Length: 64
Image (tube, rainbow, N blue to C red; front, top):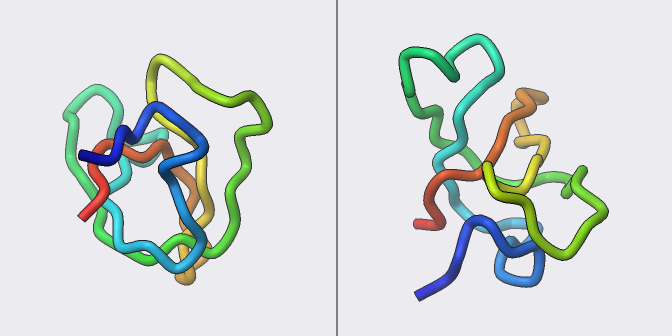
């Protein structure tokens, strides 16, 4: 199972669920396709930060 907290497992072009900054309190997920990976470190406790094809930026919660 791919781990959304590990940069290695998040691939450009992958379908993911992310949580947007403004949705962090509610936990509302946004589905999309990874365009860019913004986190430089190999892992992050809250999920790898990505930009979707739509331009939305958030942290990956699930890799679909």
